[in-house]
Every structure is written in C-alpha cells, then in structure tokens.
Image 1 (cartoon, rainbow, N blue to C red):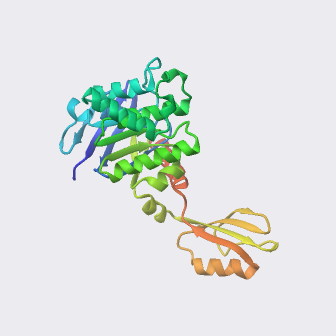
Image 2: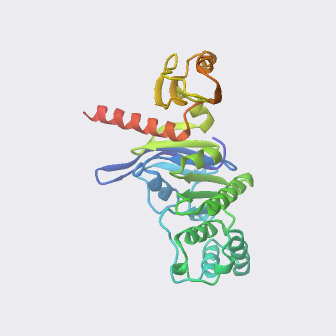
Image 3: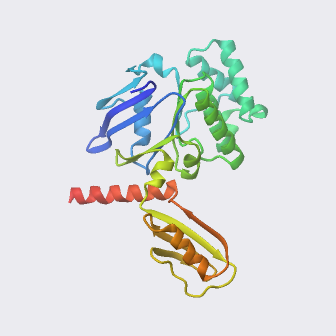
Length: 307
C-alpha cells in the first residue's frame, strides 16, 4: 500500500455494542476521501481512534507505514463534530495556542493564526471571545485550529455543519487546496451533494462495517437504475415509458426510473414521439441515492442474518 494513512481491520466495542467492526481505510497524500454513514455507523469512533482519543480493541493505524504515535498526531489536523474550543479564549489567542501545542514556535504560530483568521473571514472577530461568536463562526475557528500547523493529514468530522452557503464555499475551497498541496483529507459529512462534487473516493459504512467504496462516478455508473426526466411543451396525456417505473407524472413532465440495461435511445425516442420535448435528461442515481440504497440493503441483510 502507498504512503499516507492506513487503517486496517479496526474494531472497537462499547460493552455489547460493536461500534466499529473491521473498518479499512486508506488516505493517500493529496487525496480527499469521503467517509459516509448514517448516525451511529462508527465514523466518529473511527476518527477518534485515528487521533488516539480512543484506543482500538484490535486493528492497526499507520502513517507512511509506521504506527501513528504522538509525534505523528502533531502532523494531523483534526476538526471534531462537537466543538473542542475554549469558550473564554479570544479567537487569535486560541488559534495561536493550538499551533503552539502542535510544536510551532510562538511567533510562527501567531503569524499562521493571523493568516487563517483572515482567510476564513474572521479578521474583525480576532479579539472576540469564542463564546461571543455564532455557531458558524465557531466552526470557522475550528477549521483555523486544524490548519494552523500546516498538517500532512486533515481529519474533518462534519465540517460543513452550521455554515451558511458562502462560508461552506470557502471551506470547500480551502479543503480542496490542502489536498492539491499534498495533504491527505478524510472527511465525513451528511451533505452528500457536497461530498460527490469534491471527494476523490468515498467509503460507506453501516453498523461499523464497510458496505461500499470507490469513486463517486464509478459507484453511480454501477447502479442498476437510471433516472430519466422529461418535460414536454404541452400535455401529452397518459404517457408511460417502454419499461421502468414512473416516479412522477403531471401530463407535461415525467420522472422515470429505468433499468440500467434499457435501450436509452429507444426510451428517449419514445418520449420524443409523445410530443414536443423542451427538456430531457438521463442520469445515473446521485451519490445520495446510492448511499440510501446501500445503507437500506445493508440493514436488511443484517436483520436477516440476526433472525
């Protein structure tokens, strides 16, 4: 396996609950990996084990082939889902402090704190107490804290939660830049449209186990269905596709789920023959659809095995 973060057969239980059950992850330098799952799937527990906050029952966590120790963790930037900031510390003081904890000299930490505070649009709030900030601005401070020491690996747990669209765009831009500059990025998010547009690969987990992995484009292409949307200029009456399932039909528009093996040219021709078409598209399911179907299938399979 190439360099970067490697998580192998990681397991962790809390009493009778197996929170993580054999998870494997590989986050190479320069790649952005989406780590997806429903609430309680084991994502945060896995991330906390990578950071050493929790210890695994079994499994291995390495960075460039060597075990992740305290020195390696100083080269990781971590943004937890639950904010880990000191509420009564000022913004610039806070970011500088975390830079010092990661081993930076005082002047360097202060300089880098100023850079990230300005980059994240917090310059006017640099001397405010963290507790005086909105939730979205506290999220920006969390990102600044995770970046101040120029980490080789970013571990981001729900980084877009609570952000307005402009702040979310800034966050995406910065995360992409860090990956382009060679940092590995492991990112969890429930905003699957965001993940689909920015991640090189995704790993989907359910009940602590991996249930799907790959590039978003490949997972979508492998789906057994396609979604066709048609809009006609006038009402076409009781139109139906050659095969497939009608999800929505209004007379002037239709949304249809088609088998992936359908003859799409024939399907399109059939829609065009019904009337003047003003819009028509055929697409594989979105990553959100893939996620929902994968999680549902995994839960059904688990239920059947346990019966």
